Image 1 (cartoon, rainbow, N blue to C red):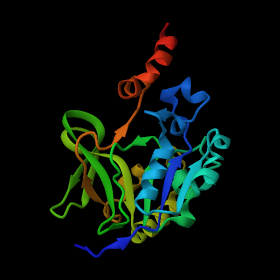
Image 2 (image 1 turned 120 degrees about the vertical axis):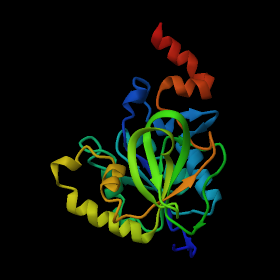
Image 3 (image 1 turned 135 degrees about the horizontal axis):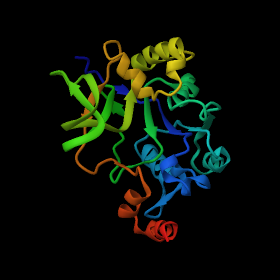
Image 4 (image 1 turned 90 degrees about the horizontal axis):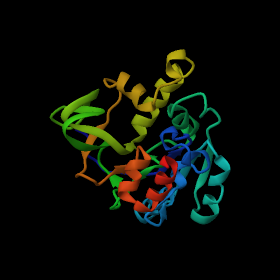
Length: 242
């Protein structure tokens, strides 16, 4: 198993989507720009990346892209526009950032990390994972004795599952982009997440599982989940239900 350290070159935060499950809130404010416990979600993630020494940060925008235009001036990040975000799934955001992919963190703009999970050096490319006790609808992982992901199944029980940031190394970036370029124009690709494309090519693409403890990575799929974490949104939710 390859264990020599490599330095992280940059980070790409995917922030192009509509977040339909947050409508009507997301009709006026991208989910990434919601303030949660006093801090804008994407700004918290940018801050944590910068505190870990990662200076080159790219934000892939699409939906309500103009609302993100203050970020370069405030945080010294670079915006990349995904012009296909309405027609395609998040693989198009990875493709939009293809020129900067190397040793790169791929992050979801709506993740919340209570403690900073980022580090500037690593020994292996990985996908973050949490453990589900009992049944789950998440993307469940199987690994070999080295920790390399060998199978991904949607749904399972008592299993580690994909959630959170991913670390590409240069080898993974190059191989994945070759596959994505070859399959990009296939009709079947249009609605796939980049993870689905990775899952089809597990034999060729190497990621390891990085285990995190419960609640180390949070993702708010619904307004109810957000209200449980930040009660300031309860009045908004209750007004919708009234």
